[in-house]
Length: 71
Image (tube, rainbow, N blue to C red; front, side):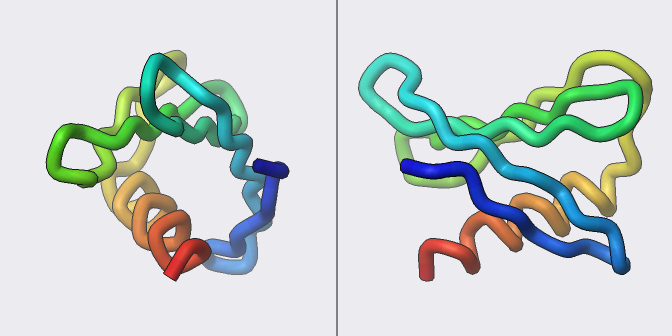
């Protein structure tokens, strides 16, 4: 899988997919933080953030954009 971009509120974010264990995960770098998304057993995206605090609405919008990318 290749990286792809999504736009949230006129801001472009690069989404990098990678294989983790038996599944596919994604990470998005934002200024000061990284948001990692992992698929759980029911194919729901779970977000894990590191670095500076991240707005919850941004995390939800990024998750929706990732799902929409593959729809």
